[in-house]
Image (cartoon, rainbow, N blue to C red; front, top):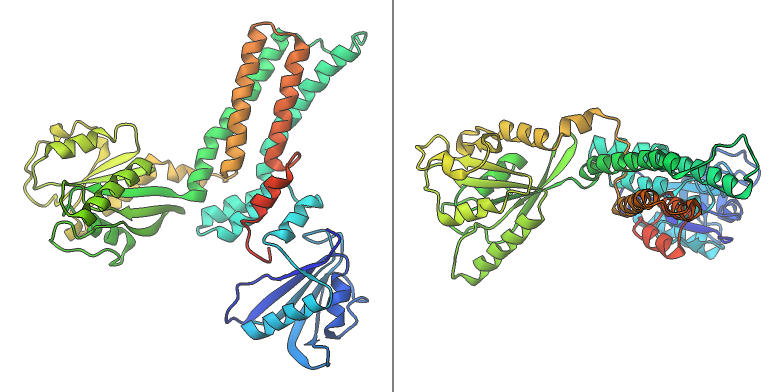
Length: 454
């Protein structure tokens, strides 16, 4: 990290401005070589300076504003310079080219944020929250990302590790300095409630992380049913656009059609699937197989039935596959005479929504039921401080298993010094979540997912 890096930090294309960023010990000196205006090496930190970028022949490349930020009070804790150019592709690329010619190296994806982490400016959870902020599509996602950037999510893990340090240090004092009378003697009976309390805290974080996953990833929602039950019409009604082709011909939808809606700040990834039926059409049969696979992988299944059609055995068989999933049964064409007894469905009444998509009836009720099913109103009203990425949740689940193993060991009266080693091991594992302990391969993989210039 001794070199100076640079990259374009705004999306390339036509725009009012673009930002080319440099970070490193020589960032100010390098930019000063191509800047015509004040001597940037002598300006105060946190200042914006008007001037021009010039090439080696002193020809003006662009009129710019240059922000100078001196170490250590910067995002990377290094000297950082940001050149605000006009937003065209040609001037932006030319400024980047001049920086590279004068001693900068092109930054790797996420390298600015990686330097901020390695220099102790942020931890891993805060770094991941930076990317979450960039990806945020809803206000709830933005709020959760802000809490991550502000360190609130990190505090959840820091408090767990702090509790464990207290237990470890007490045990160590007992072992190394048994003559100290003013230190509590840690026995198995004293340790059991402490470990149980730790387990409860981890369980609470994991349970609430389900909300974080919903906020970050949204709810994968599939619309399932036989042909011509109104699946495509429902998708269009929810999206409020003609996304899917709607006809009276069975099998019109042969592949998936996708769209996205937001309910109270939570994204629903809507998937209209091919109608499920036996068919000799090869293309349609592939679509049917794909529909069944999507149904299996969905967070929410909207199973559609026509009110004016009899229940067939294949519908009943599909309904039986929904029992262990989040689902709602939507009875469409409710304005027509029913041809089946609802008792045949063998499901709770609160899982049934009556629809008449043609008459725009039942759509609001469906949205409200989804809000209820996933506690979206509660998620929206709370301050969203949750773990939300798979890496962190996986590590925490592993730690929970090991805490449960310690609980069993204590009941089996395993020696305290052996227990202490297990607790310390979990403490180190928790450190992987916020980056207190890390492997270089993890960093390379994680920051490679960041956009260039961030």
